[in-house]
Image 1: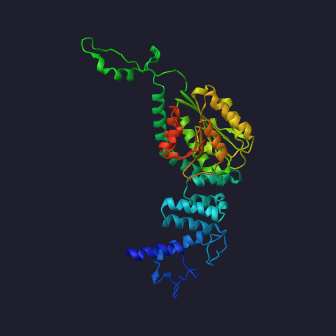
Image 2: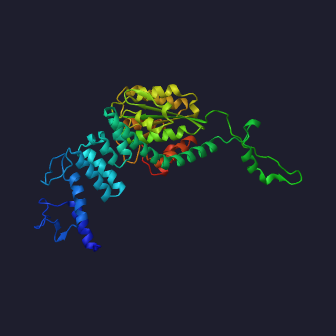
Length: 402
């Protein structure tokens, strides 16, 4: 039976506000009512699922409205709740509710139980939570966690791999086109296509007035270093950075390195063939020493003019800020193209150190947050040495001002 528009509004408000003595919505016969409106059986199940999460201050504790809710410490109860929300709500809502459960009800412990982990809808936030708990996971749970992480990685690769490859390779082709190539550098396919209008029927040949070449013969046309802050506030950015690093590493036209850091620096480049191993190689949490990380990355630079260094950090320096700024200035002056991302995720406006972002801007290095769907285009713009400030402005991305 379909509700009228007014009944549907009542139903939605009833589910939002909840029931019970706090708002005078409980009917005498035990049914849930609002001014004569009664929730149907299916809606009562939805109401209970919402009540367990949003009507409680913590596990097993009732809220100030005296309504009973919460998932408590019972694994079967949590498992049933996870199953209920997947039945009642779309996947996008389920992911939000799971994240809220972890934050509001302190249910991170549930991620240490394989049976519960199997019932969770996997997403980037779940992966970041799993990575932060990886050191305390029992062996059996870690096996399940790897399966969950693999599902998220595979899903992200399906969405991000092809756009990234097309953007990067297309940009490299444009950036390295050579109009005065040596004989062994000529791209014959493009040269022939460009000179078809000069075909000579009498000689049955083409006069190549324009020659197009591959450019310099190097094992890689660009060196890309991703330097990623793995402090707790950067959790989802670490996940996306790991995925993109693996995709970039699959392109022979670029030489990709992945460096993650907190107060220590770890080079994960050797793991890039397996994104799951990359993610489990990170250690979310801890402090931040950007200067030390940049010092290591600087040691990797072979040809500054062909190097793109992507620093993904909220710029809260826990080490030597003065030395960090000197090192940033040195990298920029040497010709390294520095890209500063305050976040690489869909989580909205990030919290960051405005003073350090302002310093970056004075060097001509705009600092801004980037969503995963825009990252391939950003890297293509960097390869073409476009003005990244203008690139961001064209997409209405707010950058730190100088």
